Length: 198
Image (cartoon, rainbow, N blue to C red):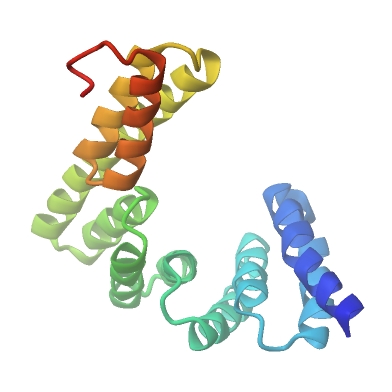
């Protein structure tokens, strides 16, 4: 039984690697079906199976797998995002909007659902909401790019206290107080005499 458990943990990781190499999503489908035979209540494997089916343009199968994932884990924002894309591709704009709103509700730190939601509102003819979510997407995307550059700066030069201080400020702007305090403490460790850090 422990051996089966170890195999089950390996299936999602390997399937995810296959899905990222888009041409091999068929391999991911086979792998995930094998994994689900061992552990039929694995929400992540259903989500990955739905994603693999989506890349193969098997939208009905994708929708079914994603729905099963949601039944098993109703608060996974990534699953709602994948479901929103499937509905969008099937031109079910109202259902796409519902799913993408759920994705935002459960996964506020990513910008992709905002972009897809703006596109769904454009296609549904709701110009006001389309513009509002387009603005949100642009703002969150800019914040994401800024955060990426700041994290890169501390990776490249971890002994520069100013890099850590700037990263802390960005975390605080994003209301991520725990990460901000960690970064600020790192800046203080590197330059304890700097009063502005304190």
